[in-house]
Image (cartoon, rainbow, N blue to C red):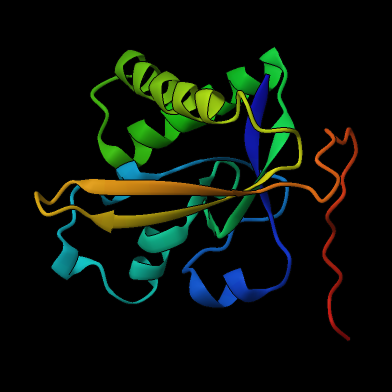
Length: 161
């Protein structure tokens, strides 16, 4: 299986998101976090998170970039459990069972999104409100230069000194 993990090329996420994701956290689209907002309410750092931030499942911060990574059954269980707990604690899910069903739907969407791209393919998201007020998402990919599936990390971030 493959799933998205956060990746950071520089420290810009620290400046544009209220909470930036750490590198290597599992991630989902996270569009659900904006479903209660109108386009007029999406301003400032919330606007940046809405427009192009993935939601990480460790810190529950946002990341501009994610990459496709291998995901085990155990990893998927942690992803679903973490997201279900987040739904109960932060989004008013009525109970753990309902939250787990919703978490599995979110995870399934990402599993499907990652089924074809190669490991280390970079994803970005662009979100907007459609004319009917619904959230519209467009995903873009950046393929590794040699187009071969790498089994080790090919991207790293080095802090400026």
